[in-house]
Amino acid sequence: MKTFKGRLLTLILTLTVVISALSPAVWAAGKVPTVRTTSALAGKRILFLGDSLQTGYGLSDYSLSWNVMLESRGGMIATNCSISGSTMCNEHNGSYAWESISTRTLPEGSFDVVLIDGGANDWFHDLPIGSDPSSRDAANLMGAINVVLDRVQDAYPTALILYMTVWENDILNAQGKTGDDFSEAAAAVCARRNVPCLTAHLPEVSGIYAQDPEFRQRYFRSSTDYWHLNAAGHALFYPVIASWLEQELLDHYLADDFYDVPNFQWYAEAVSGICERGLMVGTDSHHFSPSEKTTRAMLVSVLYRAAGSPDVSELICPFGDVSETAYYYDAVKWGCEKGIVYGLSEDTFGPSQPLSREQLVTFLYRFAEAAEPQEFDSTAEFRDWESVSDYAKNAMCWAVSQGIVSGVTDTTLAPQNTATRAQLAAVLLRYLDGASKA
Picture 1 (cartoon, rainbow, N blue to C red):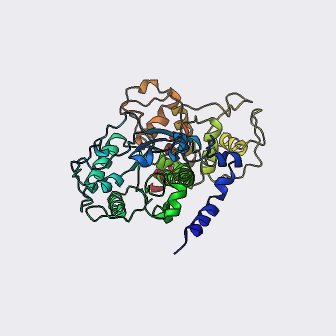
Picture 2: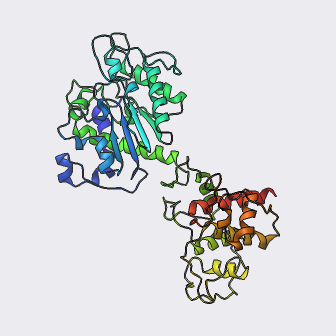
Picture 3: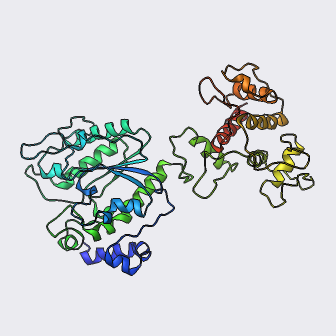
């Protein structure tokens, strides 16, 4: 079994990169600098829902808590609804009264992440664990956790819901249960519901060795406190929780690691499919920018790639605003030669000009027609059909009848609205998937 000093050395080596980013004076003073990092955490809204593990209990300066570090260093936007002393269960044994996490008022608004913790006070006050991980009886721990998860998922249907167990504790309470028994019960409920759970009661996971007196003396409020970290303990735990949160967010989002494409968005599958085929790429390594406008250059480039990027070295580009070094240079020559796109004038292409939804569909229709004649239903039942330009009516009828384009509502097409990158990905993928099945 590793000694405390041996475990401490391992932790120090693991955290060297993190610690080295801080100046010696700042680290020695126990202060946490405000550093915005480019990561999956940046800009994400997080709700903390739990007990004193998330309130910075006992700290003279709350800004030194790992929760605040997720804001100051990770760039998250936090709302903290944790209350020290809270139990998960909604009943008590007559010796203690509290506001149960299972009945706590939830804030209005939306969140990207909800991080729940609890169970330490249930253990401390000898409350029942329960035996059924599917129970909704909030008088025991398992049932209360399910009640909390139900309420949170109903309140924030698009949020990533996470759970964190409390630090290790093998001390027996009056019912003969250890703190670890409560943590393992919580983990069992989470496993059944596919809720990611940070098993912080396992010191090899959290780096928190609460059973070690020397460790507690260094990183807890006192050697007799098994729950509340001091400033050094919060600094020790921050990289662990930040790394775990970032990985869970990345798993929750697309495998392409786009921080701005949650997998619950309507366009997520399309973005993933188009990028896997190499037809579109992110605006940088971690952003797709789904709401960014689709431009003429962007669309013709995507269609050129979909055509296999044929050799166009013998073609001449007549447009003075299309540089030979531009990423879309070959695509513009190809598109014009195929009659898919035209210039705004004889010598102007307008590569950065945004496209409307009807223009996007028209370019795609010409692309399809260049391969083979397209058949379509000439009727379209949308309230704003008259706002479709005459030149785009056939293309829009084709796209609607083929299921390539749907309305922005059940009754409106919004043909004049600017097309976004997300819409481009969706429209193109639907066309390609339909063409492959034909």
